[in-house]
Image (cartoon, rainbow, N blue to C red; front, top):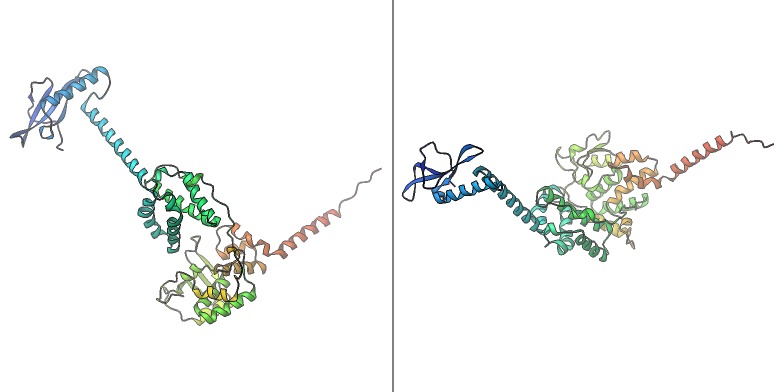
Length: 413
């Protein structure tokens, strides 16, 4: 649209009082020079003139007179815009409000599935591990999408999420799986809110999450560990080394898979360095004599080479099936249905912690060795140090007896 500006050129009167126009120097409209119409009126005792618009934009003298009549009426009644500038401002505000209203409606009409697939998932793939992303996709496909996938995100209420909880509970899924599923929904809502795809309260805040104790309590005896390592050595020497490293250093599987030769900081002093661990911190870990011997037996690569790789020379993404075959052969999980009591690869890290406590390592030191972010995470091992707790009780008892012997009985006459 051509901008109507106050012309510096001569203005001509029309048959309508207060309406004037000026002509464009070169541009023509309907075989004559284009005309810009002006409204001329008094406001607050002062003469005022405003440019209305060009003939090429659809304006003419009659329409200009109608605009002026409306402004004068507003000036008399005190209702509505009194100037063109004010009228344009109000119109602009209304346009902005209408646009915001449409955008809000568009946000509310986006379905949960659309936001999950189109917006959330690409970001999750960039930020999270492949394993985590696949887990979230599985939960979405099986439990989330059938209940709320086609629902506009702005219409999803806590009652909808309770349906997801019930369906999962009726299918005998663990409380941990239900909580994980609700966490995915919560993250999608938070993501949508941060990116202006949703404007409202996250409904997961009003849904009670099921409580669970997912801590694995099973750890290996020294005899079981020897049996497992012997079997692994015959099946896969690399899997044997990886298991030995977890058992003797308490390293998680992914920490071992990311281990590079530059992280073998000091073989003489027996120091390894683990980067970007689960709690996002880096930490040193210390080798036993057996771990030192393992590294000495391996051919070191360049500093940035991985210590352990898959068949294609790339980073390992999951524990070898040889581990599960060995566990199955040894019958460690035979007849066990409680997943917390089953032997898995993480059992090696749990065994490392359990052996430490049994040998007298205090819980604070264990927390640092394992790189645990919370002291509460190591408290589960407290019961494995009965001798320490018993000794503390005996010392406490001795102090009571010692002080009791000093008490002089009162004589009653």
